[in-house]
Image (tube, rainbow, N blue to C red):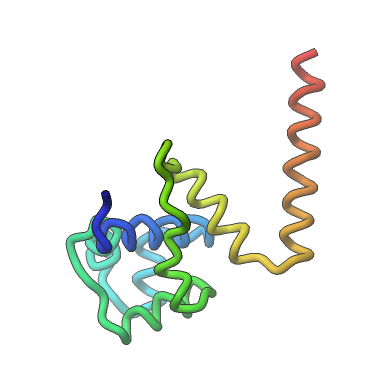
Length: 116
């Protein structure tokens, strides 16, 4: 079972990548060193409350979202790409979510047609 720090690090990485930010870009936005962001994502450091607020603001999420690790999955863990997709979907509003879902369904239909 992952520690709180490990779960937080994975969540931070998923939110950052979903927003399309590098560690360096996120560090700049929160006024920190890139190594600090890397250490957070690798569960080597813990953020202060002030830093949690800055991270949430930079990522465009409520601070609680930084700790939204989702339900515990017993059968398998999500890979980083799945986490990034979920974080991206959660960061969008209803109409934007529906647009992305429509685009994804269109892509899947196109892919199936290409296989034929």
